[in-house]
Length: 548
Image (cartoon, rainbow, N blue to C red; front, side, top):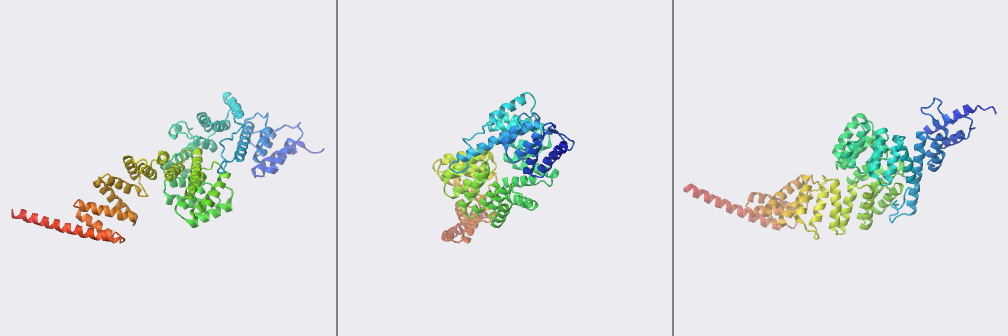
């Protein structure tokens, strides 16, 4: 009939693009299907000046299938298409189809924690994709995107060195693909070795900053993010990462203030708000955590981070079963969601179920061997099971990842002190390491003093107890520890003739009241008598030397 087919073709091409840009994926697919369904006498490549690069109508159709997650259909639509975009989309769609089948298989073979593990499941498409990509690489036809996909496939096949090379090629050829940088980060590569091979591009500084947080070089990471903030002052991502660095450094007030800024600026953002919920949990901020959980539910109930925030809320209210339900839900949505495994481990510890806790922590370290919280959790759980050899091994892993964390040194010290190991010297070394690394919980000083006292080195015990009482005073602590420390100091000073000091400590003991008051009273009498005697002796000596 009287239809101008070229005009229809042009209208449909424009429609596919307009609809895709507006996120209207279903009508875009319909338009693309009609476009490919037109009479074949027309050319099938659209480059009518209204868009940059030419791409075929088949590609437009495949892209609409891809956007609707019909991956196998997208791939088969592109068979025989030769340009670089079509090649990438076909192979990437094939890869994702394989990933989806792997996920489905994993769900069917769910493990005991009914959060599927993909131990047995494999992406069956990997070898085919790897073969085809290897040919493009050999022929020099691979661009940054094909190298990215090559890296993903090699990493899935656990060929980590080859994957690293492919991903470095990818970020060299096309630096602005953040997914390639993230894939590189997940390979567990040594940052110092990697830095020399990174491309000289501003994207590399985003990567280095992110890697610093990953390997717990948080001070350095924070400096990078402060520099990046000068160039990207409005970036939510940079703000969230800076807040996370403060959180990793246990600077909870600074982290909380940055997360509050972020939450005000972007109330519907869910990414990294799970870390904000961890801070509110640590600070026992019930109202703020409840508000955050409510807000996250309204924004997107089925996001792993939302489930994690709600899990933290229930955990803070000591409803541990409910918390586990939500951490499990998070893992149903994303099986590789690290913090949910670790937090679920903590809940099982609270519920006195060490076997389930160990299973959860193990999953966490399988996904990311750099997760020091999970290693520490494993150590604590084995300690509860009275298996200090195992506990020590796991605490050591945590300490390797965060040598500056005093808690881990204290934990190792406690293992060495246990009846089973009874290695006092090693324990002492660990506690001294903790003390040098700013032991906030104040466990180390008392432990060091006690170990010296047990081995009869009372002078060293005196010095450390003195340091400890100063710390307890600064922190405004008044409990049994203070009483025990004052009692030791009183008696040691009395025995070594430091009577003024002894009297001072003893007077403080009296202020505490309680069932040691009688002991303190009689001690004070003895000290005052001794003081009188020594003063009389001193006077006699003086008068004798004067009369000579």
